[in-house]
Image (cartoon, rainbow, N blue to C red; front, side):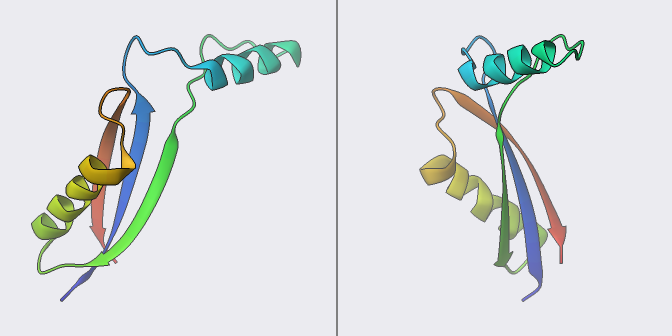
Length: 83
């Protein structure tokens, strides 16, 4: 089976407060940087074996649904590549 690397970028849904992003934004402004908005999210990298790229993508989507992403607060983007 081919090996795959998936990158799951998790970010807060529109309208959800981001206190960590606001804190970073305020600190950057305090340091003199002119920023309009900062959002804090997370990047998860998953290496896995699967029969195909489609199977790898479905496996990681299942991981996201069952553990990695809070569907009430977060959305995600997924990229899967052959390693």
